[in-house]
Amino acid sequence: MASQNQLFLGTFVHSKALDELEYLHNAAVCVDTSGTIVAVERECDEAKAKETLLPRLGWDVTEVEVVRAKKGQFFFPGFIDTHLHAPQYPNIGIFGKSTLLDWLNTYTFPLEASLSDPARARQVYTRVIRKTLSHGTTCAAYYATIDVPSTNLLADLCLAAGQRALVGRVCMDQYSPDYYRDASPESALADTRESIAHIRRADPSMSLVRPIITPRFAISCSVPLMRQLGQLAAETQLPIQTHISENETEIRTVRELFPPSATGAQDDSYAGLYDAMGLLTHRTVLAHAVHLTEGEAALVAARKAKISHCPCSNSALTSGAARVRWLLDRGIVCGLGTDMSGGFSPSILAAARHAVLVSRHRAMGCYSSSEEGEREKLSVEEVLFLATRGGAEVVGLEKKVGGFEVGMEWDAQLVGLGMVDEEGKVSEQDGGGDVDVFGWQGWEDMVPKWMYNGDDRNTKKVWVKGRLVHERK
Ligand code: GUN
Ligand code: ZN
Image (cartoon, rainbow, N blue to C red; front, side, top):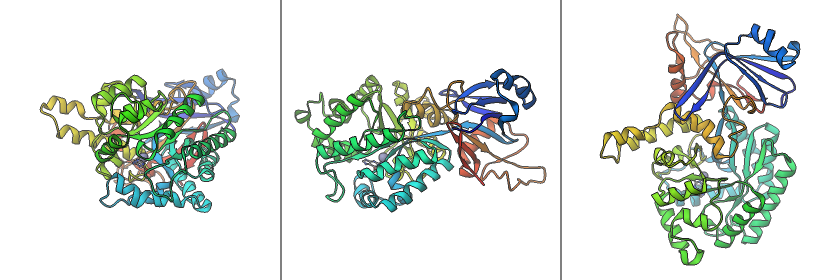
């Protein structure tokens, strides 16, 4: 919430369709004190906005805060990180040559367990929220740990910092170390309910923060635990997040641990297991989905479950190269995730550019026809769609965020690029990091330059629900 009505002026860029960005130049967007967009006006400079637009809204011009995008700046929807582990933030960049299962045991479980220390949890969670906001992430789907107080603290800190978030207490009652495991399905469920109740008390209307049911992944959850979490999701209508089909050893282990005879599943597939447990719903966010079979993709599509594509993580842990085009062609909604710290970067912009590169590696790889390879490539427009509108749909917020439309909420970032003057200089104050733009370059060049070379130096201001939550000084 902002204390004043706000008028944003300048260039606005957002996704119109999967492969199309819309550029609104010399435009005006009005945001009321609840953080809702109440007008989007093309060809409307400041004078016109003050003369006609604000009076039409019944707004007193003297009481409106005006925010102008300067030359080389534009407003862009906030990024949605559909998959990240808040407690793993201290480990980004630390994974050696490990792959998923040894990485979990060597690096991840010890760190997560250590966050039951409240002081450490506060330190790490405060920082991860600040860091992701500074990269333009206005909404994040967080995994916390198994510890209830620190999970609740994460939700409280998101609320206080103004970051939109889904926060999940991690459930895991088997195949993890003794020091970091739920004692039983019953205790996991009771702890999950406790955390859900806390988050609901903290934000009763779920205007910013909401709980999400979080079975870690099949290997670390018993059948009774998965079944009970499926029932809890049906009872509460809450979203679910988990991992699926990330790594081949993991998939093999799932097949060994959960034969259909023990689960009642139709087949021995990973997606089939989740479905039999009641975990594959239209509110389910499945991270990775690198090695899904045709049959599993059809099941995911039929259940309308969503996928979080985490290319930085998949490359870092050598998990594989997800087939995003193949998923999209099957009508599956996809967004992007950093998957910190499987992923090495807190930035969704980095995930977007890595998604482009992974798609190009697929195009170079396993195709007999170059036409098929060409189709595999994701464009700049497409990955920016995944980072905003796609991500919003993955977390069930597509009516609220992801674009600049009347009725949506103002979750946005002001992006600034380095405008090079005639002497070849860029002003210190407007510094654009690695993104230098020359006078003859148009918007269709500037946005790809930002996608490929941008970072938090370009993220000048960030708002969530109309509230300024980050400003780069
Ligand atoms: N599978 C189970 N837990 C994790 C995790 O923390 N990160 C990733 N990338 N995969 C997982
Ligand atoms: Zn993950």
